[in-house]
Image (cartoon, rainbow, N blue to C red; front, side, top):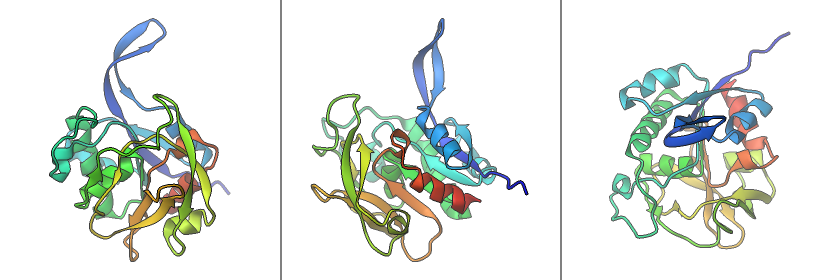
Length: 230
């Protein structure tokens, strides 16, 4: 019997210049690792470029699961903090769109996975704050590092990956004060940085991971999202 595959929406971002073939043009961009991970985990990937925030509810209603992808730093204005010198330039259009997508997913109970920036934005959406710079989670510019994360037993993430797991990392920010209803579900083995967060107490399938599963071969996190979306 044919089982229909769930449609997984993935947020993307505008770039003013991208090159392919003979072209150098503005583009809606998403690293190929994201849709490939969705596909290998049993889903159909749909790219969601920034749009009017008022349309987020309609967009989320058309997908079975949602991924908020990694990328630029969240604007500190979004969590009421002054900008620190090492915080990257703001991406206001993307912040507004993805915050609206997160709100729509939370309101509708659509399974939601935040990756790196997506985890940080989930925390901000629920009233949390961020550490604007920490060392040790980027080895060099443009190169993904790797370190183990330890799950918290009894959590959603702990049920997905019950053992300490090496993961691909590339981030210089992290969650500080947790947003309302969120609990930590994994920590970095080295410095104790919160590496995964989720909604506590049966608030639906909502998970944020600080690392980049799309840059590795472990499909368990995405397969769990696809399973929940199915």
